[in-house]
Length: 554
Image (cartoon, rainbow, N blue to C red; front, top):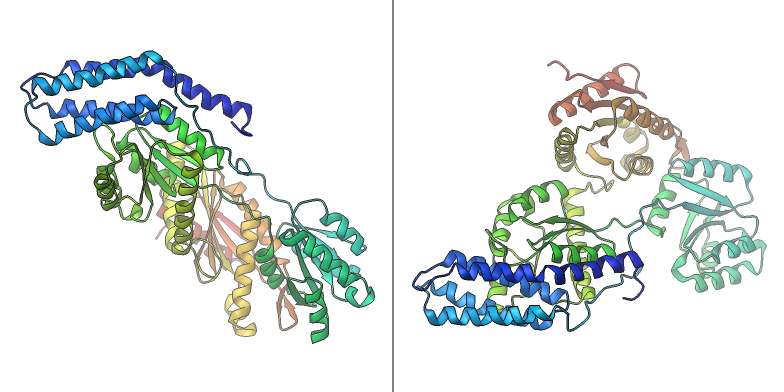
């Protein structure tokens, strides 16, 4: 079982033991359905029920290592397929054939032991890490005031600056195995004849684990050439434009946290669901489960997974029918549907794909192949969804998706009895910024605010660009007074961030309005309440946060 933790190994083995323990009851269920079949009746409903149970047995047998049981079940399933498609009265010969298959399954059930060991997958890197990454900049600069100012400015964005007294300290820090981001004054390349060689060697040794950025008060070819030969990845002119510096650091930076893929598993067999859920979770994914096809749309609305993994045959609604139902909903037209089944008939696989599926995986499947297939499709979905849902300038949710998220979170909060707050932000005198410094500088101001919001708010909070210089923030499980305190701290930090335009320094502020559920019950009213509070903040002097607890009268 590779490098799996003992607890996870035991969980997977327990699933196998549970399957063996319940195998007799599965066979008894098949026998019971068979007993209800009668000669001379076209009993398609019971045959379909029998087929579902046999199909589940074939899939579970393959998953848990009962190869012979799975193969016999699949042959039995093929017989039942033919009987169902003919929809004719049952003959004694056909029922004898059914009895023969049932007897074979009963004989195999007596063995109760798998022929081959259940395959277990060890994901590289283990589970996803949720603790926030420590963003540290290694800084080598002789100017103490520059170091202090940069430390303060970068601190607003969650960076810690570690000053280096020498390049030897850089080599020692970079030798710790983690990824590092360093900013060096280019003058060191002139002052120390060995600096260029040392840095180039260190860069070659560390490869992509060390990002070297250089800064200088001069912009000449020779300095830039020395920087390139030292392995420099970026070059900045002093005085620092913190916005541009942060942009470049975020592009080059390395410790980006990956949000796990969210997969919905649809299958009425709890043991197989548990097995595949554990396999995907071991690969760092989040799984939701729907044992009943009727629950799928509700789960899709709430969990918003990036892929649906489903069986082909379930009672009451097969996979092809369920795929068609999912595709009827405009919101789920683009979500990948991957069938995982023991079905080997190519025509049926193609029919499933034609009705809305994206891929067909056949049981048994090697866990690593399952993970690779799911990861590839989920990544593609996430990329497409990102560009459809995001504002191109800031990378935040766009107006439409922000409002949809607000409606969804108010419904969730009402169901859970939890508070949720909505904050609307407007950059003060933004037209003056554009008129004075130009639209490119204005765009930089908006990007710096979006970065600050992402850094200072929780991962669970939802941030969007409402339009123009307006932003919206949904603070989950947060009362209005707490939300106002959080937004006021961000407001204060933003007002202290140095903005740059053609070497000129200036500062920008924002105003904010906050409204909360359950004081305001509906999402639309919550939006209007926050907008009203924002208007009041602007009218009473700007650069402040105002709370409203009532839906404003119109």
